[in-house]
Structures are given as C-alpha cells and as structure tokens.
Image: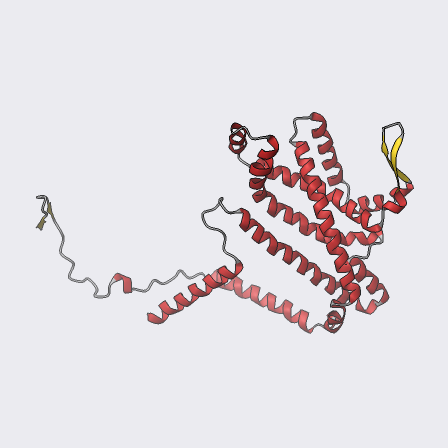
Length: 326
C-alpha cells in the first residue's frame, strides 16, 4: 500500500513467487503453422518445374530455329507494322471514345441516340467483319465526296486510292476501339464525385475548363487501368489485319510458316514471345501512370517493384537475425 502526493491511496499486489525470470520481451513467438499452404505451394512448384522441363527438353519446340527467326528482318518489319497500327488505332480510338462518351452524357437527345447507336453497333459486330467490310468498301462506294446532302459535292476522293491496307487496318481497329473506349471514358467520368462538378460550377468556371482541368484528371484514375486492358486487347487484335493483306507480326509469321512448314511451331513461339514483350511493356507503363495519378488520392504512393523487392529483402534479413539471436 502506498500514498500519493494528492492523498489517494493505491493498493498494489505483490508479485507472485513463481514469476519466471525470463522477461516477456525475450520470449519467442511461434508463428501459426499452415500445412495446407505448404502443400499447395509444393504442388504448384512441381507443376511449374514440369512445365519448364517440358519446354526446355521437348525437341518439338525447336529452340534453335526459334533463335534463328526471333530477330530476322521479316519478323522485325512485321513487328514495326504492329506497333504502328496499334499506336494509330489507340489514338484514334481514344479520341473517338472521348467524343462518344461526351455525346452519351450530353443533354442533346440526338447526340445521346447517335452515340448509343454507334457503341451498340460496333460492340455487336465482330472485328474481323468490320475489317473485311472496309477492305471491300470500294465495291460499294467507288468515290467518297463531301458537300451538300442530295446536292453538289465540293470535294471528291477516289476510295480505291485512299483506302490503302494501312488505312483500312487503322480505321477498322480505331472505329471498333472507339466503341469500347467510350464506355471506359464514360464510366471514369461518372466515377468522379458529383460534389466536384458542383464545386467547379460554383466557382463560375467555364464548362470546358471544368472538364479539362477538374473532372477529366480525376476520371483518369479510373480510366487508365480499364483502357490499358483495352490497349492490350488492341495489340492482340492487330493479328487480324493479316486478313486485309497487311503483313504485321502475325502476318509475317503466317507467311514464313507457309514457306517453311517445318518451322511453324518455332515461328508461333516467336510471335508469342513478342506479344508477351509488348503487353509486358504496356503493363509496366500502366503501373507508373496509375502511380502518377494516385498522387493526392492516397496517403502513400504504391511501392515500385524494386522498392517492394528491397523491402522484402530487408524484412527477410531482420527475421533471420531475430531467429539467430534466439
């Protein structure tokens, strides 16, 4: 029993006689055992090892021919065409998607109806049908003119000269991509809190300024991951331009496979690896773009892969030191 300066009396029980000499901080905490996790991990590792062994030892893959074809000029030329078609189609599709999304959100019933019809049509028709239809467009319209409807034409284009294989591929992919991008952009705009719109309007800002400086930058946090998925799908969709006589990466592989039928499998592996490289690069760019737009929305930015690996090594080293000290 002890008395404090304020006059209060506190009672403290004496420590028990059998208190262990080892302090609580020196005791070792035994982690919970999870045998199921170890079993599943072992099974997955065995399956991965079997797949890797099969890829490395199966002579059917012909890895020597794979190395021969991987950097051949004909493959690299097709790769450049794939990159060019993807870039142009992505820009055309994104711009068209923004216009369609704004049309869907417009107060004009005509713009809403036209935008909805366009999106419904191109999301319903397969891409290969769109490309083949555009490739044979000159059979329907030999000339394309701009002027007064049902009146004189001011400018006339020869469609057979205007619609080259590259133009057909870019326009077809861009028109199809715009339909999907419009829904991505519209969803991103709708994800912005309504209070942001009201605050911008209360400040008396012009509608264009509200959209370009306040609403759209916030919508990009939601648009970026969804549109990158569309972009990855667009990279793979470029393989269809082979059917409109444009020799992209897949078209070059198909042509070489017809010329060298014994190398079909290694040529397909070449195309597979290049598509994996392209999509991986896009995924890395997506991560850093998302990280950039996450500023101000999260307290701490998500760690980069290098930072994550370094923190994992530091945690592992600290754990090993603790176990060695015990």
